[in-house]
Image 1: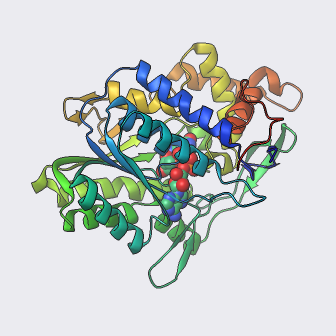
Image 2 (image 1 turned 90 degrees about the vertical axis):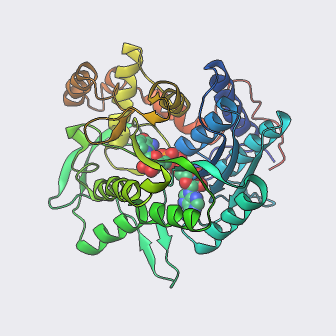
Image 3 (image 1 turned 30 degrees about the vertical axis):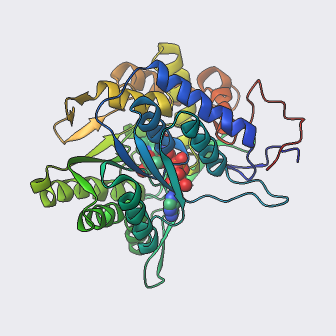
Length: 386
Ligand code: NAI
């Protein structure tokens, strides 16, 4: 089949297998250039097929030569429908790992469910014995509980309506977006999906099954961002979920301290991923941030961020943290010079001058690349096996 991108606002409903493979290949090549990562031997990555989770798995496998088990929720291809990008990414990742004799197995299913947790534990017992690193990188729209209750996460404000500039992804113009406040139920549901409850469930299940090494490490990813996006992110529904995630790290640290396990939250940089493209106002912020950071020479993508996490934010067996026990991989994004330039551009940007202030091309390049499109070397006129 000849596969073309079918884009609807912040999602692409097709993915290109050859392009996704190229995306993974480049991330592996970059990781190898950064040299050896120490301290990961056997890792479990929950949310391993795209974005920060995929980058974490690549750094574990190709930086540290660790055996990895991945958990993802992706769609396989059908006769006339391509698989999801994460599915192709994972296929490529496993192939590359196999070529180098690096253990990699993946479970495709709902990470929130008890079944997947049991299957992962069984696989760890059978193949690895125990794991020393658990990376929790889920970004999910919903969570189904054991009793069938479904919680849906929302990206809304808390308290007041928020009105600000936003990028209209259909035609790259600036429009005014208004984001309405969530009700109590929506806030609670978002915390259920994106907060720390499931992370804690995972850690307890792994501990109970005795598949965690002593002094193991677990990491979950978060975002804070600038005041500009506070109403929709840090102080919005997703921010409350992230607050819960942070509190969960403290709960895990207390509960697991006898085994030496340490739980960390790494606050990462805003980057175009399937999850972040869906947040109102944030895509315009990202396009301006990309332009600013590229000009200042400190822009990074997911694989660069996660390599820096393991090469520069680690000190022996621990990670360097701030006063709130957070790893700050967003340090460059939050630098005063960067934020001042972003704010100045934000104030001036409109539909007529957008290309001057925002890296629209870079935004879309990352977006298309995520689904395996717009890679120079791939011949998109060729039939491919989907
Ligand atoms: P993503 O959408 O690229 O990746 C999500 C991963 O979760 C995929 O592997 C997907 O298959 C998996 N997944 C989703 N639902 C699942 C389910 N029910 N069961 C099993 N697997 C499931 O997202 P991204 O952006 O990499 O986000 C990962 C984490 O990083 C999130 O916690 C996010 O908040 C955080 N983060 C993201 C930033 C960004 O700008 N993209 C910035 C800072 C933190």
